[in-house]
Image 1 (tube, helix red, strand yellow):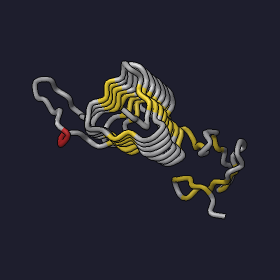
Image 2 (image 1 turned 60 degrees about the vertical axis):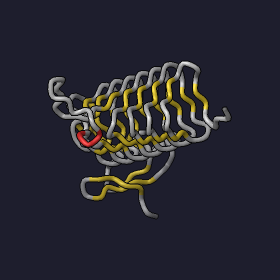
Image 3 (image 1 turned 90 degrees about the vertical axis):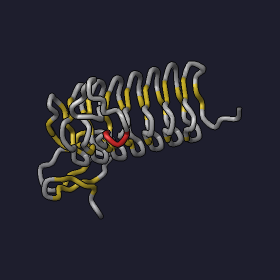
Length: 194
C-alpha cells in the first residue's frame, strides 16, 4: 500500500479515515473510524483518537493522550503526555450517553499548548496560542495568549506565540525572546497591528 503517512506496525487505524502527508503514528496508537488528521502531525505511543475527531495540521500529540468524540484540534496544537479530554459532563454507566449527538463539543484553537496530565472538561474553547500548565483541570474557556494552571485552572498571565511569558508594564509590550509586539485590548491580548 502506498501511504503518504507513517504508522507503526502496532498502530490500529480503523477505516474510513483521512490522514495527511508526513504524519507519523507510533506504537499502540488507536485511530477510530471517521477521524481526520492533517499533514505533518506526530501522534506518540498509546494515543487514542475517538470516532469523528478532527485534528489539524502540524499537531503534536504526546504519549498516552486520549482525544474523545466531540473534540476538535486546529493547527499547531501541542498535547503533552497523558493529557485527556472529556466529552460528557455527567457520565453514568447505567444511562449510556456514548453517541455523537450526546457529546459536548470542545475546541482547541491554533497554536495552543496543553501541559502533561492536564484535563480539559468538555464544552470549552481554548484560545489561540494559550498555554495550559501541567496537571491543570480546565473547566472554563481560556482566552487567546493566556497562561492558565491549577485545579481548577485560573489565568496567571499572558504568553507570546513563541511560548515566552509576556510582561506588561503598560498597554503594550514586546516579547523578550522573539521581539513580537503585543497590546492589551480590554481584558484580552493581541499582537500589535503596526
